[in-house]
Each structure stands twice: as C-alpha cells, then as structure tokens.
Length: 203
Image 1 (cartoon, rainbow, N blue to C red):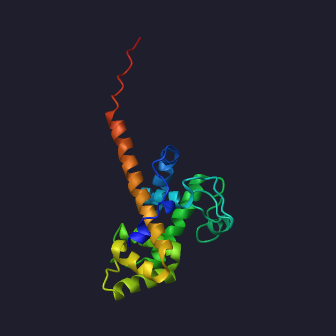
Image 2: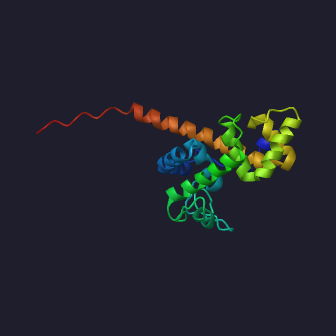
Image 3: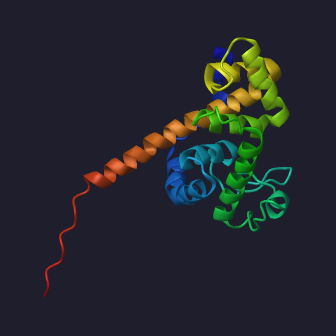
C-alpha cells in the first residue's frame, strides 16, 4: 500500500499562501453548497482543490471549467439546470456538489455506509464510474475486507481492480480535507484570541 500513498508528485501543498488565500475567499461559498446538498463543506472544498487548486479561472482541454471542473453543458442540462458555471464561482461549486449528490444518491445509496466513508466512496464512484465502484466493493468483500469502509478496505479493492488513480484521487482529497480542517481551526482560534472592541464613547 505504500506504493499508492507515497508519490509526492501527486500531492500539492494545500498550506501554501495562495491556497490559504483561496481557502478564506471560498469558505462561505462551500459552506452554502455543503448545506444545500448535504455534504461536509470542507470535504467539498478538498475535492475542489484536487480538481483545480480552487482556481475558478481553470479550463481543461475537454471543456471543464472552474473550481469544480464541471462541463457547462452538463451543469445546464437536467437534472442540474445550473447555468453560468464559467462565470459564477457559487454556481460552479453548486453544480459540482449537485452532481456529486446525484452520484451519491444513485450509486452510493447503501444505508449501511456512514460518513466519512460514504462521502469518500462517492468521490471514488465519481472518479472511476459506478460500475468500477461496485467492482471495488465486491473485490474488497471477496478478500475478506469490509465493503463499508474505504481506507484499508474498499480502497484495496480499487487498487486491485484498476490500479493507482482512484486510490490516489481519494487519498489526496482526504489529505486536503485534513489540511483545511486544521486551517479552519486556526482561523477560529485567531478570532477567539482577538480582544473585543470597546464601544466608542459618546462625544
């Protein structure tokens, strides 16, 4: 398993000054999307960082745009019906979260799955496709591993079925999530340490 978790070339520095600037700028955007579509906002942000490093100006050769790297045609079509993903960062993040919610509800709908494993497996299904995701769980179960747990279990099935890509994708997102969680805690601690402003005296 070391082979799948050690390639530093696959992991970017989510603590860099630029990453932290984008983190603070987009935190409210992801909080709104997370509340609307039922995801942990920092998990969504971690996926956004994996996709684009939280860069709304990012464009891919195949036409995906923005923070969540969504196709405008997919976002604008039913059932998402979200337009302006190339211009509006909130629309972009909403479209990414809405599509992820569709994947979760349709293909990762086993009631025995609990968060964060359900969300991590949703990322896996999003990255590898629902057919491969079912194969991951079946391979894990066939090896005597727990098909309801991602790390050290279903991810092992994923590595055996298709190799490194999806394992690395989900591992990176979780590492970014931890980084953003720590950043959020630092921001909260900084706010709490600031002295309260005294009211100004009346003239």
